[in-house]
Image (cartoon, rainbow, N blue to C red; front, side, top):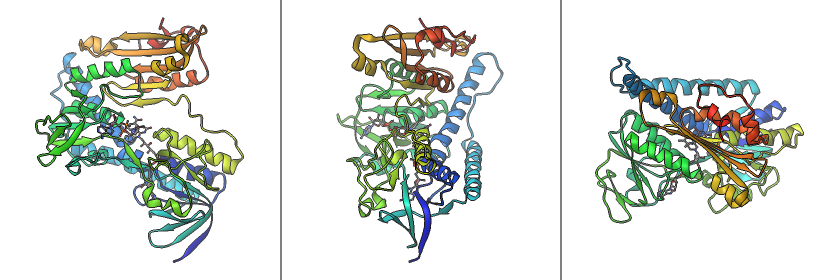
Length: 448
Ligand SMILES: Cc1cc2nc3c(=O)[nH]c(=O)nc-3n(C[C@H](O)[C@H](O)[C@H](O)COP(=O)(O)OP(=O)(O)OC[C@H]3O[C@@H](n4cnc5c(N)ncnc54)[C@H](O)[C@@H]3O)c2cc1C
Ligand SMILES: NC(=O)c1ccc[n+]([C@@H]2O[C@H](COP(=O)([O-])OP(=O)(O)OC[C@H]3O[C@@H](n4cnc5c(N)ncnc54)[C@H](O)[C@@H]3O)[C@@H](O)[C@H]2O)c1
């Protein structure tokens, strides 16, 4: 057993948060060791945001090719050669790995290709028995898909498996109604699968605006997705080909069943108890607003904490933490007004409070403005898909406290308006801004 001392910081996990923390600490002159047993970039780069967005883009192209036919273009019916597309996807991801590797070398960060577990509050053990010691330790071990504990669950797939698929299954059941279920349902349907969504509640995307979620459900229905609300799954039967619901109903056979039923934090293998680090009931590492755990010198960021499990949140938390610890800064991560987009077809984005949340807090002082319209491309092609934009405003000054966008380009439009909301703009500030015509975005400044 050898002892590698002399580090200022050990980072456990080389995903979005761990990498951001390691780079920022090294920029401040800290000597950093980072443990990552798998691929650099973690969930986002390998089995999350990046390959998902690639598939979403492929599905978007497929949808546009269908529209092109409607508009008079002489294009044959579009079918995707998955293996060929995946070569492009994997090349893109490999370039990210190579870029991380170069930057880590340049920053002098020691990368240890190993799981890590605590020996005590200053010491981490690698799989080969090497002990690393440092004054500070950052836990950034992220999470993994949660599979429901029901008979036959082992037959089902999770999002990690989806990224191994080399063809679209003809008939696919997706269980869940959150981000991943909605995103994979939309893109698989667009790429030619017949999708059944099994949702235990009565709506998609809890936590998003109710009206927009209803409109998205309608768009999905029109695209051919079968939405089974109020369906809790009791078992997978027939070697995982059929879904048995809690009311006893047995589904037709599917070629694949995919669970998109949330994620679990990777805390078990860390042996946190040896360092005395506390977790919550769900296994997340408990942190305060400084991302400090209950143990002096041990911090945690990203999906291992109860923070919103989004890549930019992990990165922003890690950078601010290292700026405070090594750079003398004081700024904390502002957990309010974090913008987020679901890459559905069409996408849905939000920042700030939903109408329901705003009314619970501010009652009658809330004013809501809406724009429902057909984006120009849908209108030209005479397809029914509609966009719905909503602003939630507060009081007589009509300060904008929520922006909710469903429709073509919502994913790209939201970021700029999120800056404006954070700066405290009012409805009049929006109205005072000259529109860009003809766009979908102009609807945000023309709302009355
Ligand atoms: C399908 C999918 C799509 C997503 N799409 C988006 C999106 O579009 N936009 C967005 O913002 N977010 C998205 N997310 C969420 C995003 O991927 C996560 O919030 C983000 O990756 C969290 O970063 P992290 O650093 O906390 O953890 P991770 O990226 O999960 O990294 C943790 C790393 O720690 C390593 N590790 C685990 N245990 C140990 C150990 N004991 N020792 C050493 N290393 C360890 C793991 O191998 C892993 O590489 C998506 C997630 C999924 C699953
Ligand atoms: N575009 C993005 O930014 C993006 C995309 C994908 C994932 N993510 C992040 O990853 C996280 C995880 O995504 P997710 O979709 O797995 O989780 P989620 O929390 O968004 O949704 C989980 C869904 O599964 C349902 N569910 C849970 N247990 C169930 C059970 N036993 N039976 C039936 N349904 C069950 C829930 O009701 C919910 O609808 C998200 O919270 C999000 O922060 C972000």
